[in-house]
Image (cartoon, rainbow, N blue to C red; front, top):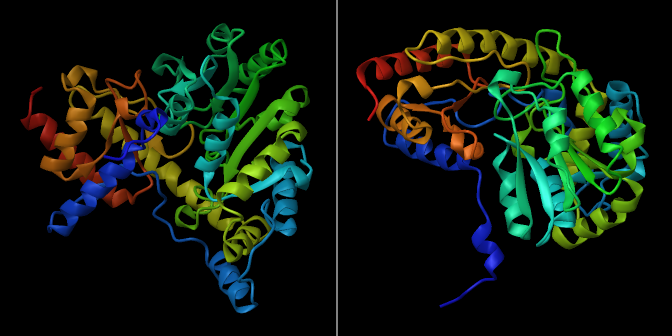
Length: 393
């Protein structure tokens, strides 16, 4: 019998993909399934981006590129970040990667080891904790609380830092809760981090362009005092409806960039060449489709929040970013994962149980409103019928 090193037994997963697989299987059996589980825009990638990839193929871009990505794309990333954050990183510090998760993997691998502690948001993206545990480091959850509008608390985050802390992971706008941390709180966090110069920071800003109700996205890249140890995570998947293209980027400080480049060489050599030209067209071309998509998400957000708050024993804060709602289902008496499973199997609505996003996720479920308004309304009707007919198990 083959055995692996013990670290592989500690790897978790992103259960949204397991729910997607089950929903797809049920649909294949002829069931009418409404998927509000997976975080994937239901929009097509804008046509000019698709055409740029086709042109790149026709122009003969069939070979390897530099491991860090083609220079015009890295320059475009720098220019876009300057426009949005006020700071233009050196293109030599930009790394093009095959999806946002890669940056998490690399950053946590660099700083995680037995005896180290890594802070991460909880509820939060499940791969944070999975990778921390894989490295042998101790995951330290930073509570993301409903009463704080699902923004992180700078004071609470800073209180968890000690001499074992190697890395702090920050995510705003946030998955799964839709919280956006205000500027004053981020400034307080940065001021506190200045007192811990040996602690690295990874800022997951993949939903940076998806905020609502006048909320401002505040990038940690805008704070000079921490740039020498800041790793920025962003990409194309959410903003440009390019999830299947597997395109992300990260910005690394001078002291880590060459390490990141070497990991890239060892792991994937380079990102798909035509996809990089698509990414270039996305950043340098018209942004109308981005604004239209976010405006549509805003409309759906209001539909889903109103509908959830009308369900029996369910309450839902209004998310201020991303495209997720994280309703409180404690008063229903259901455990979150059991409710999510029942909704899929019995009502044909795919959602994700809160505990799939962390130990503090019990009592909540996550819905993605990256689906049509019609489907959202149909799903809410089914949820209403289910909860009305089924008391706690």
